[in-house]
Length: 122
Image 1 (cartoon, rainbow, N blue to C red):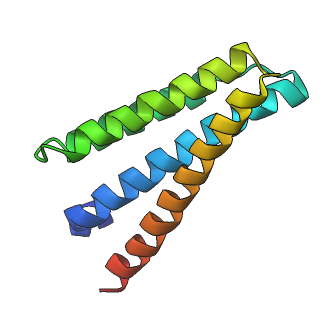
Image 2 (tube, helix red, strand yellow):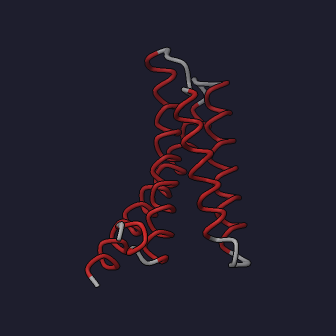
């Protein structure tokens, strides 16, 4: 029997949300680094992975009435902030907004990581 069939759904959901928040954090990091390095903002493979993880999270959360909407709003807000910064990389206000988003994502990532560790230890 494969590990996939042995993993409880609550662990899969937590892993997916954690992966989504890590990818969103990486997206914002890329937006900030774009100004510093002059590199292109996004890579096709990264965007594909982000979209797939978003779709997977939406699928897992589809039975809940509140959480999917909150996750989708956060996803859109983060992408909007990053996109705005990529268009105006010198804007200090946008950088501050992105820094706030990054901190929120950091806290959620830490919390989900800890929760996942607890789930896996049970």
